[in-house]
Image (tube, rainbow, N blue to C red; front, side, top):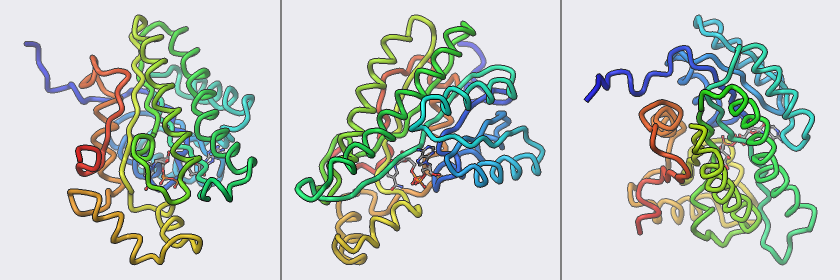
Length: 264
Ligand SMILES: NC(=O)c1ccc[n+]([C@@H]2O[C@H](COP(=O)([O-])OP(=O)(O)OC[C@H]3O[C@@H](n4cnc5c(N)ncnc54)[C@H](O)[C@@H]3O)[C@@H](O)[C@H]2O)c1
């Protein structure tokens, strides 16, 4: 067996993160940069993306912040182009963007449903296409990671229909791309967390249309065998695994990071 000490090394690797300014994205970008990767941080909230890039620069890393709405084809293509010009190539991309519309199906408007699918699934398509074109053109493989959710595969029944449908679509897209691109050494996987302690989760817990915060939190925890919410830091290891050579033979996989939720 060859030396395996550098299996997880991402030093000098070049990556794009979409949804970089979010609760999980900000922690991931900071940690990926601390492992030596060079990053383009993309988010619809441009100022927050630029701020994230600046804090990486302050600790001696190399990063750029780019404003990008993943609902818009030209903006996704433009962001990838700008990122690749800055980075001088591309090795991996991570997509955390999401538009969560919580409403029971009978009350949900067509527009709310479409928005959820448009951003979460349509955005995943646009990102995959733009990133895939670069990786295929470079001809040296690469790794693409989309964020899914346990909701893609297990029902919550609290207004999560559109969100769940969009994430199930992401899982299917990941499988298709994995098979399409495997001959070219490009791997595509999903990370599917249980509830993560972030502002996004707070907005669910504080949603007046749902149960009160305490009761809802208790219900959520009762379904997670580990007995706690995930923290953004819990997603760092799985992400490093999927973007590094440690997962060289892993593609088309949905990696649940859920404290045993899906094992039940
Ligand atoms: N937080 C959780 O409990 C949880 C659980 C399971 C899965 N996830 C998934 O993890 C990922 C990250 O979640 P999070 O909690 O960090 O969410 P978040 O809302 O904090 O982050 C999402 C980021 O995407 C950006 N964004 C939204 N719409 C965009 C658009 N059109 N174009 C570009 N950027 C856009 C937002 O500005 C934000 O910075 C999501 O895909 C989410 O579905 C989260």
